Amino acid sequence: MARKSAKRSIKLPHVVIGVCGSIAAFKVCNVLTHLRGKVNVTIAMTPSATQFIGPQTFLALTGNQVVTDLWAPTHVKPRHIDLADELDLLLIAPATANILAKAALGIADEPVSTLLVSSLPTEKPILFAPAMNTRMWLNPATVANVTTLRKRGYHFVDPTEGDLACGWQGQGRLAEPEVIAHKVLALLKLDD
Image 1 (tube, helix red, strand yellow):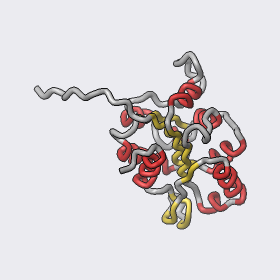
Image 2: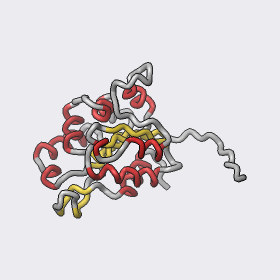
Image 3: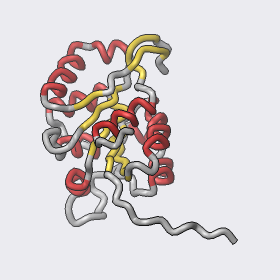
Image 4: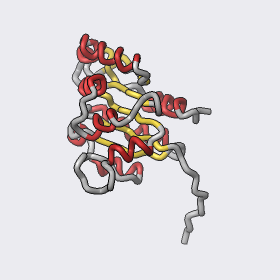
């Protein structure tokens, strides 16, 4: 019978990934493979995100409880406050036009936006990896929200150009998972 080797308990940096409602949500699974063994990950999901990928997938990949509800009675303090206190970096991927607008305006009405409002970019890095239709990315409201967030110290991995799920071709495609993971590790000063 094979035995698992005993590993030393090493405290890894804690990354929280806020997953939003986009077909690109499935790519977060690949981001996780690039982060495995380097960081401890907790996933928070918007209600829309759960329409694209199930929380069970992220539970299996991270080994950590997935936050999908603000009102689950699992902690003494609200879970979003615990996570904001514990995290070393917050990644929002895919970041939709909706979550960018909420972040710019301070709207907190579901787990990911509430976590964003509970975290300060002056304390710990907050990284957005947007994904959306080209018109949505180029919309003056989205452009203004991204400009505002950049001025406040938020980081971005800009979307790339290519084929989009909506049938369009143009800018709005989620950056490649390894590019997102590299930026996470660089912000944590873990890049080689």
